[in-house]
Image (cartoon, rainbow, N blue to C red; front, top):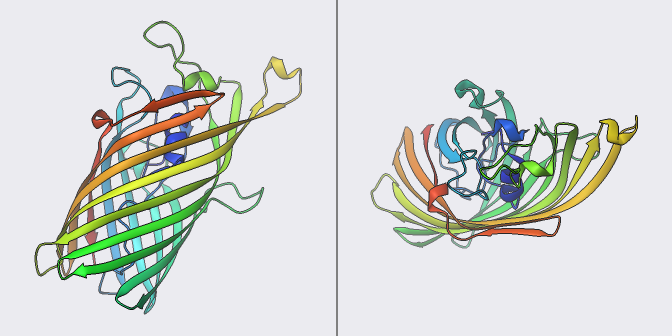
Length: 312
């Protein structure tokens, strides 16, 4: 959940979603993104504390062809602790446990504050999340702020809407170039060499809209939603090899990217626990780097799926 190739992060920056992954030869990118996937403006636990764990599987690149052997999938693992700080305010912590399955470090990824309110039949919330592990020396740390609403259209049908902005600030260590099947270098790995260190600074816009159908008295539901993400980033590259003539050279490039998802899920709810399997399929992906446009339509071969378990 914390390790991404630069291309995956560029696409997911534009997301940047749920959660995360690695590709060793192309370097690592630290992130954990539990937001916009199935968020609600309603508190979904009844006591003072809830504990969730999530395991998932995802492909490591959305832009490379399915036949590319460098796009092996990865398991992701995370935990979230929710605490009812006030009657209408939650405080949460998201922890990356992917190191337990050999996919990166274990550590605190997000601290979240989420106040709720209700007005004229609709629930609202503002979710403020800060990544304490991100670099903050040049300003605010990586931060995500979203507005959420949940409306009951009938006793068995609910709609969810979320829109948010994220300030991205993260570092990247790139590995050596990787040869492709034709003997050249892959498009993503060609961006960086082993003598470069890259820092990503930018902004993202996230939005999701979906419906939930409740099918039993316990609140179990089926959900279908569309997610859209777009990002605009500056990639600041610092070189320290002989090309810098003894001094660190620095260049800056602009990256724009976007992705659209279709997400379906099933949540089986009981007073003391929830079981929630889900699957997400990218409908469209695109990225623009150095004037080169990479675009794909629906990618069923890049489906992401997982299971969330909540004790409450």
